[in-house]
Length: 296
Image (tube, rainbow, N blue to C red; front, side, top):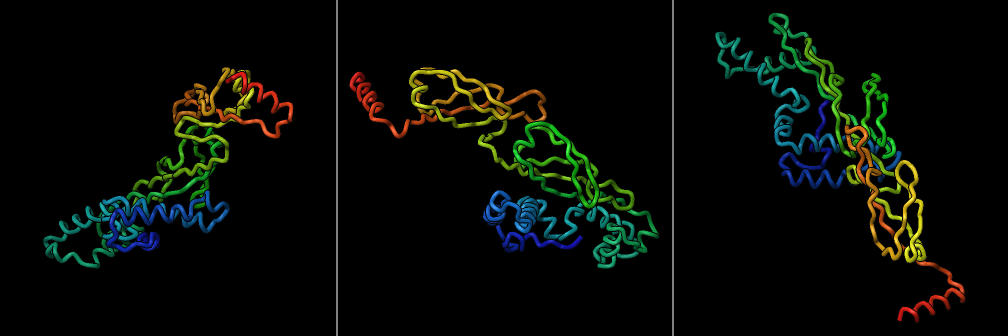
């Protein structure tokens, strides 16, 4: 695996503080976000690199491993265990403090599928495969219902089930679909992060939806019936007389599906925005003036 300089990707030094890393990540994430760069493959690739760099450097333990082992940071614990094992095995021949660069090379050859003489002479150590990270962009309407989708990862087709109600930024793990294990070790896992793009007129907050609806002046004053959109169709509302501008009503169970809770939905909140009539005729103005006098 080629070395990736996460510090360079975020444009920070190796001495950067957590605040520096967070600030750099937020700035770059806004710049290269898919919503601001539609159909831009370069920006999409850059956005993935930025997220990957932030996942490693914003985590204290992962950053320490990365600083010590570079591209092999995910195998840091295995390396330390094997290093200690080699030291114990060779304690009768040399001091453990003389653990050499040759041993280091032997370990990584063994770890990544090489044919080290040491590994041939003694039992090979098994290593878990590398975890893979991928991003899947979906429209909000795509996650309103559970569905299956085929992904291609490293030239392999993987059929996955995407549960209804999954949220933007949420990550799911597909066990065993990462890199192959070494020397009979288990495969790594595939982590898929979802990027949910909302092209609808609804605003989503977890499993609740919000919608602003125009209400004409006469219906606001006198009441009546109004057809309004929900995410999966229209419903008829009864408007109370003298409904005020900004009034919000809740439609229970008409929101978004709750993640992995089949048949359960959030609520839809509708806020009325009173629409004043325009281009009044002379007769209409007269009637409003008469109404104004009556109110006085």
